[in-house]
Image 1 (cartoon, one colour):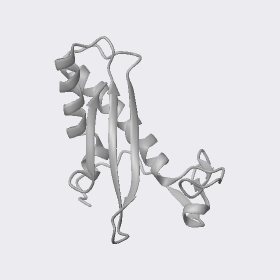
Image 2 (cartoon, rainbow, N blue to C red):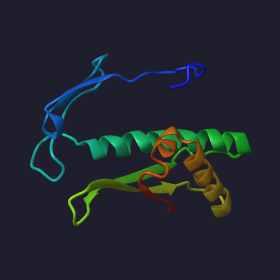
Image 3 (cartoon, rainbow, N blue to C red):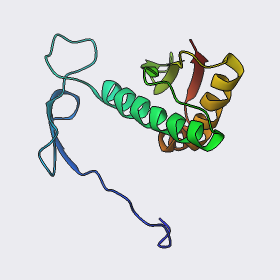
Length: 139
């Protein structure tokens, strides 16, 4: 990490038990059970957590970009994130994702521009760029 960057926030968690365990944040605001994807467990899983974090971040990036473009951002904007845990025939696991974005009331070209800019500026999108297949769709 570059020492010239200003750290705005650090999320800290302590996790035990892996995909069938528990995770708690250092401030105790997050305290969740984890379950294997597709199991009958009552907990969430890393793919759902990633989808929730990414979609929230992506919405924030769209809001910021709309403001920079002088576009009124719709209050009912939404992002439906789908994060797949997949594997190849060789049993190599990987992620792939889709972001389905709703920007009601905006001109389609304007909305697409905001989505495209968000995918360039959202920290989650930057973190996975070139690492997983992602499709963004304006719905």
